[in-house]
Image (cartoon, rainbow, N blue to C red):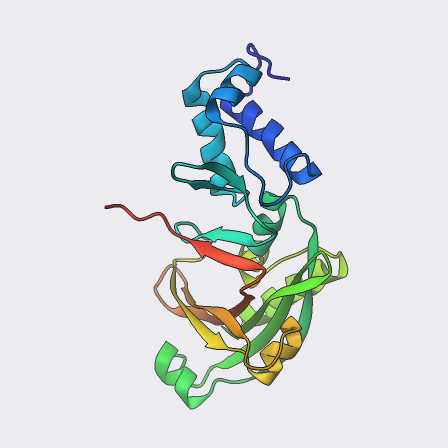
Length: 245
């Protein structure tokens, strides 16, 4: 029910109502939402209000508009807009999903020659932190991070606590918890064939296509903190970008 004199804006009320229907299965995956006209009549609001609500549903990956056909409920893929960094936990909660993250590897050693050259780490010690994120019991993403010390040790302590509590996370979630300020993130996306290790962690055949998001995270002074490769299952995850003409 829409309350016209409530503090919550009308478009948010419409969005929340439609989102509940999607999550509960009233509008199942792949189905078409009612037309804008029908939604206007049902909720007693303007077309502008309905469009604002639909834009919000699209922004969190719940729906996809198809020109000339209407708005459709997305499949069970998690959708990540490329315009804004969103953590693994935000991705799940935005879809109403539950998940968790498992620590696959944590070790401390020296940076390799390539790492010292690429990230100006000289002879610094690093932490290697590998994580796998799950949704509905299925592995959907696995992360391989190399992190400068002492940042890596601090982030691992937070990761171990979140894993124990069954809370989903990626290293992006760990920065604020560890009190580390980020300056910028440089990213590149590509498609590769899964190695034996990646295939095993994502429960895929060796050689299956996966999406890789390669990230270099720097501090406020421009010094690299972390190099991370995130491998995503293409049947569970997608990335979207709205481009201007």
